[in-house]
Length: 350
Image (cartoon, rainbow, N blue to C red; front, side, top):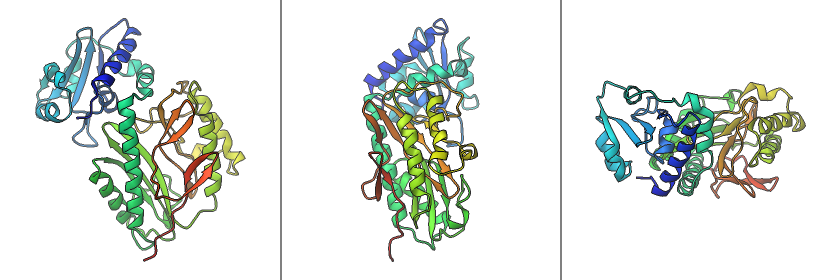
């Protein structure tokens, strides 16, 4: 059980403030990110590709949890706070919990209050910040361990298997595992194949635990011609990501840095640049038309890229600057704008 009674109380207060925007109407929480955040880290899935196995209706009487009948006892025993058991409505397995919650009466949906709910979950609370630091550290360690087991003759699927095994062994769900060997570095989302890694390879993971998602990219093998340039570009994103800044302004500052760093000025149009993270891989993905404010203690994962080069880590925005969370001291680093950033890791001998 990961839930913190202290953090749950504050989240209830934040949702109450959201509900005031719709005249205190009941609110339905039905997505993985909203339910796991509100219930402070519960596992909301069975299939990683499936919908949540529970939904929450929040109204003046409190919380009602609509839970698939075949999941209720496990959630009570392993995921929820003791007080939650009295708030559960068991839903027949053939009815989606979100549907059952909606049939209980009129209520506001997440889509009606999407911006307000993003703002409510943006600033991480103490217990979830501790969980996030641990998740990100262990995700980085899994990447280091996987890289150490690989070589130029390993296949992309060998690498993906090592990455996924390292995550699962740490209780982390592998939501995304991408690998590109030297033959496939031009692809931005390289699903693993049987191709050999060759002289240079990219490893990408998104791992979830307690609802939170760690995002990271690492390079192994030979250094790339544009490694220094992409780190300089990333530094522009970091410099603009400060509490109180608008997300669209941060995005614009980062995209404008492509040309200054020596890349084509329109390179940002060829792949997404990342954005806020936490209980969603990107919450939301930055596009340049979103005025959400950056919050202190909010997580971000920017991922600027160009052909054959990319950088990505999960970071925390603090009052004093950027704290990189996906860190393993065993991985080689270079110093860029006062931060230790990942360098390409040479293949281990033998």
